[in-house]
Length: 293
Image 1 (cartoon, rainbow, N blue to C red):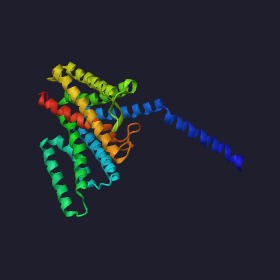
Image 2: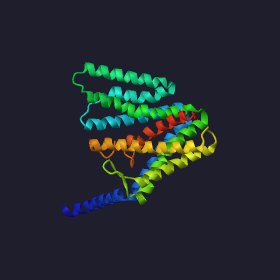
Image 3: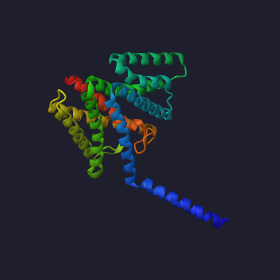
Image 4: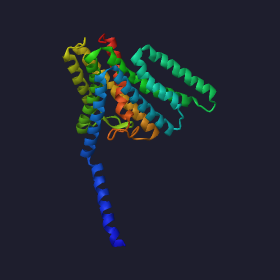
């Protein structure tokens, strides 16, 4: 009996050892992260190029997933959000931006009113539950609705290219920050919140963002001078880092490493979108103020 089982256990141990080796192999992890990151970016860019409707639908799906992951973390912290109201608002924010920016204000009013009535007529509901319910869709859907506003501000391919460029500036900024920080990063930026972030990586990220915005300026498609392009690139990159730190603080507060496991190598959708949440709305506001949109 024992001799017949020994080969099977040996094979099983070899499989476990090989799988453990793959999981510990940094190159394997890098390829997984890069592969799924390209798939995500490809889908995102395709929706942006196809038009405003596909952009709004994709952003609405992103918002729902981000808000869902946020509520999951809040439940771990003992909060009881009203997911029906919150998730509905997270989806409706990007879709309402497709109609008219005024609808964003109307939706905030309806969300606050609905949550107020929920609080009044639900004696067991705490104000903390109301607060996290409101914060979820505003943090995700409302903020990311700026992607839809960007896409429809300029018709046709120039609008698609500008929106792709804004998102790409944040993705490239993250990549440059990782590459520079992993090689020469010595001075920690926020060791208690995000131990891997360094000031060297931060400045590397600024360079990455500036490169993309200089490309947008060089196309000549927009009323965008070089000084304004570089200024916006720095602001977008800095706010993108803040967005990353804010989400890291949320995760550390509830004791989780990732907001979810939707995208292998990246974690959840909120992990993948944290810099976009603050970076894209910063770009939209500055482009509006600068007269580009």
